[in-house]
Image (cartoon, rainbow, N blue to C red; front, top):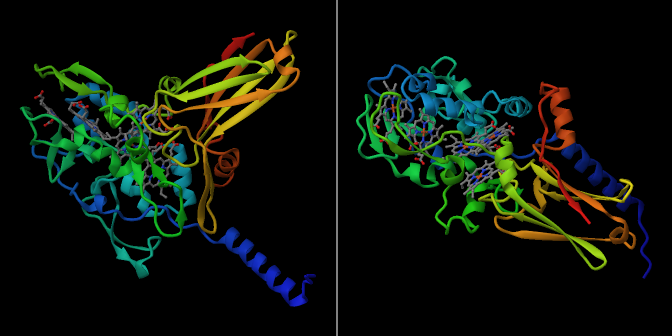
Length: 388
Ligand code: HEC
Ligand code: HEC
Ligand code: HEC
Ligand code: HEC
Ligand code: HEC
């Protein structure tokens, strides 16, 4: 059968393609966040008796060590982090970001009183009388996790504090972390799992059964008193919340081996230190494993690059095509062949790079959204070296 394209057909196709391009270029992709019930389950307004403000500085007056740990964490930078600032600007400072990055009502200049036509991007804002000047700069501050209805919640039942306290099991489970480290997908979002699914990845992996929780790895245990003047020593968690911005944590992530097997090299990469996929969290992140083969003279024979990351189209609708991130305790192997490779390769190096975002997005944020030029985009681990 012969198929002939009619003029009408060609015009229709062209119009469709053009519409799609214009749509993709000018229409904004759907907001991945919505208002979750878990944001509304608690009241974060009141200041506990005995305290004058919800600022971390005030808590730090007594809980000095914990305050100093928290100050080094990304939680304390959730509003000032240059990447947050740049993306926030790009997303027209859409208020919904603040529900996780500065979650206390006292951190928000405005209260949201519904939406125009139910559109998340068009909130009806009211001046917030409770707003505490500058508190948003503390990001995920102490009170975000600890203060509910004017009472300080914590993991102990037997404390004697100058402020009201209450034992709460959210501190010894993953409930607290889930509030922000799990973003469920919504209509018109074709993610394989969830946009951000750290808690889900952990639950589907082997660590939950082994009795690990997020705190086991991200708040390492330390035996000490809660304040400078307290006498009772307790099992506490360090508030450093180290993640991908810590070389020490990144160094723990992978176990890498390289063997020569007959006419090929076999590279084996195992996620043996991360409780969820590697990398997790922000969907832009990816990891490169770069293997370089050198001959006796030090000449580069071959370079191979493997990528652990997500391939996502964001506009006009979100579609995740591929997720090559490495699951916890899973090993993946790669074979590198080549007639001369095994005979000539004498030295092989394996480099691991953790990228916060793509080169393109990084450049765009610098050019259009005020990201400082020197903001670090990737972290390189110490290269491994194998000799044959
Ligand atoms: C004036 C000193 C002081 C200030 C200010 C202070 N605390 Fe405390 N806090 C204490 C003492 C003392 C304890 C009890 C120590 C003990 O029993 O070992 C305590 C206990 C706690 C506990 C454990 C509660 C439990 O039940 O597990 C948490 C959590 C806590 N404080 C958080 C905070 C936070 C958050 C702030 C700031 C909003 C803050 N504290 C401000 C002195 C203070
Ligand atoms: C109120 C929301 C919220 C809660 C609750 C929360 N986090 Fe976070 N967390 C964030 C945000 C927002 C960031 C990113 C800050 C930034 O880089 O701008 C973050 C960053 C982190 C990072 C660093 C990530 C990186 O890229 O290096 C770790 C690790 C982390 N959180 C662990 C935890 C753990 C463990 C818990 C539970 C005990 C927890 N978080 C609870 C909001 C939260
Ligand atoms: C077995 C230890 C372990 C457990 C359990 C664990 N993590 Fe991690 N996590 C790591 C390590 C190691 C890294 C650094 C490597 C990396 O960036 O993934 C990390 C990184 C992160 C990051 C940075 C994003 C990234 O690149 O992966 C976030 C956010 C995070 N963890 C949150 C959590 C939360 C929330 C939980 C609980 C559901 C959790 N982690 C459980 C070990 C753990
Ligand atoms: C992201 C949530 C989060 C933030 C922010 C946070 N904490 Fe905690 N805090 C926890 C969790 C979880 C525990 C229980 C850790 C454990 O014992 O394993 C805890 C425990 C504590 C305890 C009891 C000692 C212990 O480690 O069990 C004190 C006191 C405390 N926090 C004070 C603070 C202060 C002060 C700040 C701010 C400088 C702060 N916290 C910020 C989640 C948080
Ligand atoms: C459901 C809670 C939640 C909401 C809503 C949210 N975030 Fe986050 N955000 C997080 C958590 C948790 C992390 C840490 C995960 C990680 O580091 O991979 C994070 C990390 C980030 C990072 C990475 C920071 C870095 O240094 O690499 C950027 C940028 C960011 N968020 C921007 C935004 C913007 C812009 C919005 C609004 C459009 C937003 N977030 C809304 C929870 C949230």
